[in-house]
Amino acid sequence: MKQNVNRYDFERAFSDMGRGTNFTYEGRNALFDYLEQYEEDCGEEIELDVIALCCEYSEHDTALEAAKEYGYEPELLEYYTDSMESLEMTIEQARSASHQGKCDDDVEELIDNPSIKKQLDSIGTDEIRDDLKEMGAWNDEELANDAENRLRFVWIAAGQITEDYDEDEAQEKAVEWLSGNTQVIRVGQYGVIVAGF
Image (cartoon, rainbow, N blue to C red; front, side, top):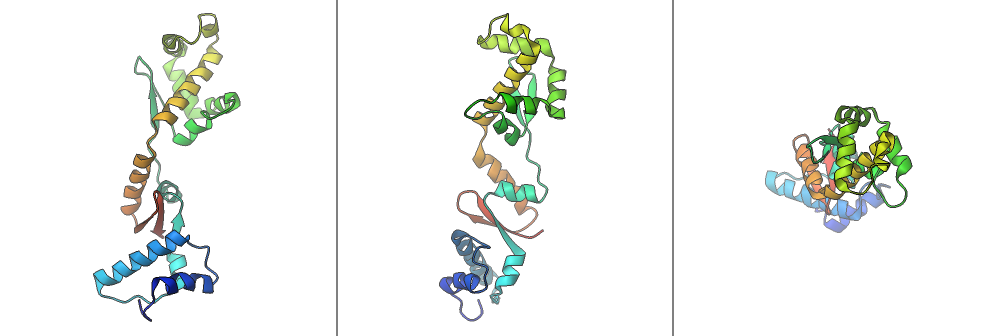
């Protein structure tokens, strides 16, 4: 970089310009490494302009968070019954209905989601009851209540989806999507710095 800026100078420049919180310590290091590599690859020196860097690049805790901010829609996740019926939902929906403590209110709220409701109607009460019966956790009298069965079914589906969710895979898919649209600098396990779209 012009003026022979070293890592310390680079990091200090952000604080001096009142931009010390624009990037984490890890993020500033990753950005410095990226810009140095860029200079080496292109044989061109870059002038350190903190304001321009803060306008051009933004840091995000996860690649998935960054990608969603720019319009990425992750794949819906599926729960399959023994009869191969499926219920699709996002990981956020699944986690909202599968957590420590009482989940009843959250499951009821999820069931009211038009997409979930439509899928449950499509599966049908008999199939839901049969799937729950196979699990052996409820007797025939308990399974006679279709409204309760829907709650149980969605709660189980949300739990299974949450348990099977692969965070690493989801983050890598988000990085791939971001990389197809802009520059991506990895920060830590899942964090990224991206150039504005």
